[in-house]
Image 1 (spheres, rainbow, N blue to C red):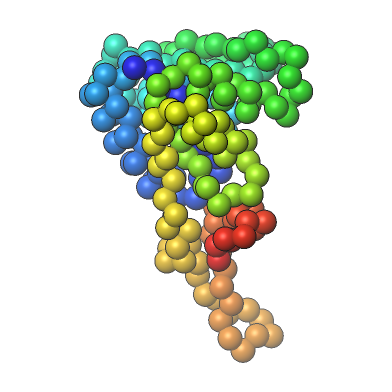
Image 2 (cartoon, one colour):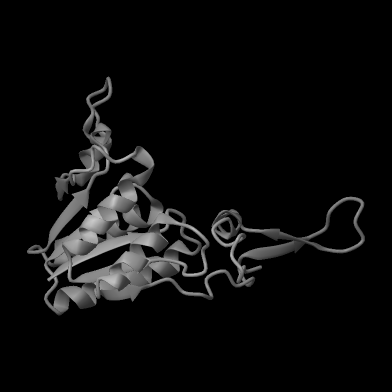
Length: 196
């Protein structure tokens, strides 16, 4: 069974998402998943790759295939280091997307990954107005893929993400939000169902 993974580049609660993703991927491995297609660009891609790398130590027969969207990742710097060096335990692959505009390459690669898999594991906020991950999720739904979305709608609860503090020239406490929350809200601000 082939599994593709994609999601937003910013993750609100990395620890919670990491646990859910680990549990999900291990369950899929126990059900027969043996090949995993994962991107190389955003926060979710990096988290998924690290978890798969850990799972490969336990289940050495699984194949991790990192899908590149640009060959510049393979280019070595003056010290002989390449950003792709961290993928030594995986296969690297690039779909034929050279003719795509650079802004469309990730979404196009995600579509190829969806086509090449039976199961899609994603981290997608369905209320986001526009995102490549959301477009890829819709593509997977149209193609009848089994979809496991590990996004939790309650990830941006105020508890643990906001602290009220005194500010000069203010009589009341002012809420200060965690930077991860501020960044992730950017995906939701233009949504009709915005959070916070």
